Image 1: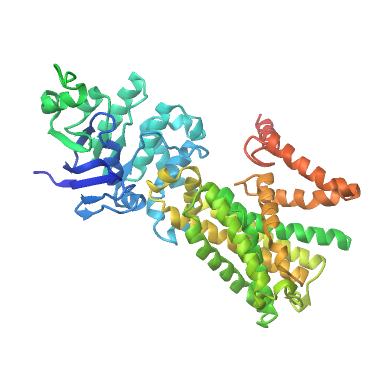
Image 2 (image 1 turned 90 degrees about the vertical axis):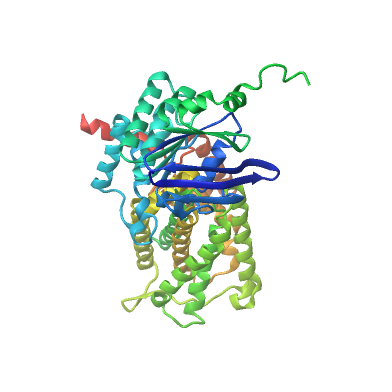
Length: 255
Length: 294
């Protein structure tokens, strides 16, 4: 049994009467790629936001590396070792691509008053950021303003920023959506390499081919409930999952 | 230099210091503030009270003034900075009015009569007035510029830029929004406090109306005109807005009209400010730079 990195226990998130998440439990092991899938409105992004600290769950327990983390704000989660990308990309538009990555490299310096007074314009910082940009293939655009980049490049920039945090867990929120075929292949390659470097990954994905191809295991959500959990083959055959995506067969409209 | 020029120059230097403070808050951290004159006033009043009723010298009062202004900035910033954009703008206007009312109606602050008899600054046994005082103000302006420059190079500064650009993304990278917005607010208000102290010892008489909402708008105009988030923008803004009414003085009735027209033209044609992105000045500068390399 491998070590569990992230565990959700009966996590619920209610917005008024809406149960966006209803007692969802699952574990993510060290070094694993876990896919989170489900139809629109299933609660995938809400689930992400409770893990990354944007929302405090209504009830339930989230543990990361053994520490209870539900209710901690996002900047504390980043410090604990969770990096994330956004479904709708969020670059720092008026900063250069390089500076976008450097912001994330400052993670250890943001916690104390004295380190946060240090200079970020150092060669070692710059070299580190350039190294990350070369990993995602954006070196030639380093001095461009991030706001000018097309979506494909921004998705890779977000990945570089998240990696600059030296995370133990990476949360990828639909980081393949809106990309061309070649770009998807490139992004898949990056995700695989990231996992090989020892970072666990939790990803939300709508593109089934990508989700099935990348993930070791999948968790299926529907209407805030966990519908199924298992290997891609098991999920593919699961009748409940098929029903959630395609609807009931036969005369379900008759009544 | 004539006394007139020196007086105008001193005013411009003091306002440039205050504008640089606002630039840290608005330009670097992206937090709109329409009440910056309140902190200018708090600096002026605390220095005035400490040197008259408190009997301190300007120099021993100054660290206290910076501390008091920064601390009040912290206390007022803590609830305000949880608000965003228009709500923050309205709250800061409110802060300005409240501070002015306190100066005006609390007898301790001299009420409508203000505070008079503020001593001159003494340096090396000299009472500074005229040109020496102008140089003192310019020296402080240089110090403020140096502090701003160091801030933009520090991780705190970068954290503020990130918050200005996208708060959610910044906090997902370990930047605590409250902490770094407050850092910018404290630094910016302390700079305003410094400007206030210089103003009090320059005028030697202050009253609440000097620090009202119109002053806040004026300071914000300087920052916007010069270029928000640029190092020299606020100084240039203070210089232009400080000189324009004087340049247009012969036109008497029309000078405020021309002044407003110029501001409107600026916003239409140079929205980023005189030194901002894609401004004429930047384009010419980069062309010269490019020409040199060839």
